[in-house]
Length: 312
Ligand SMILES: NC(=O)c1ccc[n+]([C@@H]2O[C@H](COP(=O)([O-])OP(=O)(O)OC[C@H]3O[C@@H](n4cnc5c(N)ncnc54)[C@H](OP(=O)(O)O)[C@@H]3O)[C@@H](O)[C@H]2O)c1
Image (cartoon, rainbow, N blue to C red; front, side):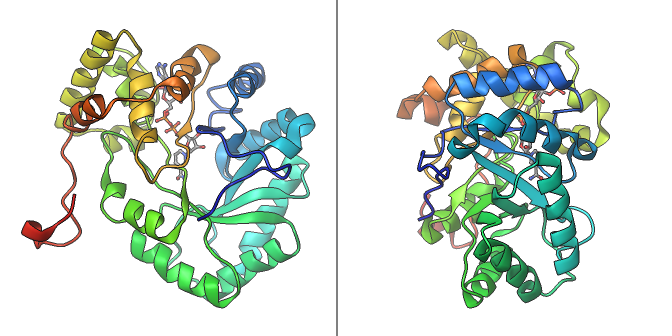
């Protein structure tokens, strides 16, 4: 089992913070404030990517994290564009290191599956980065379970392994429960799932005329555009009101509580937005509350059709 730790041995925190808004909807000061609020709350796991905000997200994270470096786990991602070939990975990784002013980045993820590059070329490159101490852990994001396992076989052949995966996961995006999570448990792979709030949808703000990423970005509007999701968000907000907490706290705590999950990746554009997600670190749902929330969306069908023998 991959036990993610900082260089000084500090265990990974129960939440990860995603820096995708740094230098975008969050300016430099708002980004710094969120970074500091995370540190005060004990978060030591930070996620970014080569592709975010034209490099500003990496630059700001590098700047804020300098004094605390040994106690942190910093992840970035390569190859969202340009494919997973050796030259592209090395070029983007070097740019990421330069932006962050870091020699070593704890986790390097492949941002998505590349059907056109041989896996041995990709994993030989990642293994080399690991052997030279430029990265400590190898990750993959947005891979199907079969893609992780195919890549894991190749990684093993070149003397390394996939340590951590980053799938999408929330109460309204549950595909990962079917094969990805059971695979991760079986393989001992850490899981840092993204978008536990459904990119803001589960805060309930869109039910009351609020605005945000889903009103400005068509890709997100399409991702969360199914009618049933409205009912789910409404009922979740109702339960949160009953419990006297914020719907965002409940949504993050629910995603965090799946046995496979190491640390969900939370995010925001301001500290005020961030606080309810950070509060999730203090909320352990009872089995009854967990099941009640689980019933607010359809459990995805199991991976085989022999339903009478399926173990849920
Ligand atoms: N691997 C990948 O392909 C991938 C993809 C996406 C994300 N990620 C990673 O995962 C991280 C988190 O993803 P995410 O941002 O989608 O997570 P999320 O927690 O589902 O959504 C966060 C967004 O919800 C809105 N929000 C948060 N708290 C709120 C509140 N209290 N009230 C109202 N709105 C609130 C904000 O957006 P608005 O203000 O704009 O509404 C915020 O940016 C990213 O930073 C990134 O590191 C990875």
